[in-house]
Image 1 (cartoon, rainbow, N blue to C red):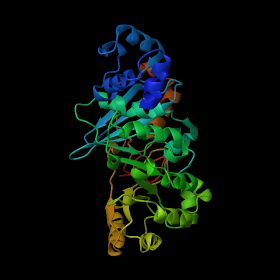
Image 2 (tube, rainbow, N blue to C red):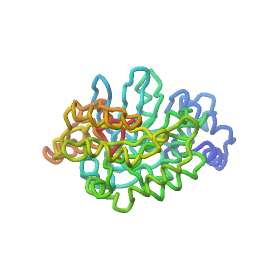
Image 3 (cartoon, one colour):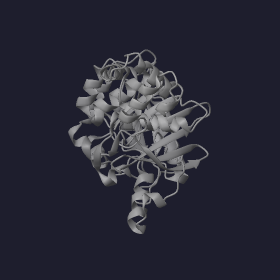
Image 4 (cartoon, rainbow, N blue to C red):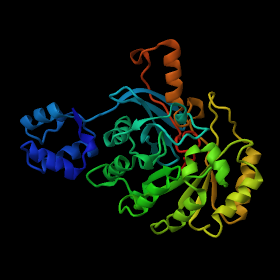
Length: 377
């Protein structure tokens, strides 16, 4: 059974026409799903009954099953199961005046960041368009307030799943979809060079926000903590970012996960400032204090160390913000809830049906999660 949320409006108009329905019925169907949050075809009352019955036989709306959620004051982390029994995470972040959703784009990740829980299991597969869209839809169904921002900063490298991510973005920003502002959608990447070059020519994706995980000012250290960086030279990456077309008043975010005694020294801060050079108006830096994971050997720097790093960058004229993780109390970092659950399942031979239902949080966008190492907002 196909998931209808994997279709754009144009594609769905073609599909319903093939099924013998008027093409405008696609507009009605998507209005019910994305505007009225109705996922039962039987309740789509402006469709003829025989159409509704036919749609139920062919399509499903939700492609994911909510398994667990964990809630904290600042975030909720959701654990979903795919139809082929993989687990993925989504995190709702509660900002002062809005909600941000951090969505996953892959099951696992191939970037291999040493400090990331998602990397522990490697890459299983790309998420389909409907599995990305469904994260937003299912979380929104649990809320009274609308989700304003979306960040592709959860499990996986978005640019390694380019086509499905692009299509999901189209659904999110289109008037017939979730109708989000382009300024409210952010793609966070570890800096894959070829897809970035493709993105800067893409009339749709070049209009959304771009965040790039740097995490080290030197190529050698970056390769050490982000192995895939061996194929993505840091200097070449910065050259591409300096030439990236930016909408007016927009900047590229450089994300930097601060790890104790690894990349948090004053000399590293000065080297990062040198890397940015004269492009201080093109970039801003998000410093993300590492979110500790019991299965990984890294630690968060002291507050004094974090603030010193920030002061050095500010002294060079670089807008720099510290993004403390939300959701530490519920293993908010990327892949932590999924990894811990798999560990428990293996240890106790516990079946999914025995595990509690709930709602959880993953501060994808803040130091916690990152299959994309430096994800934050």
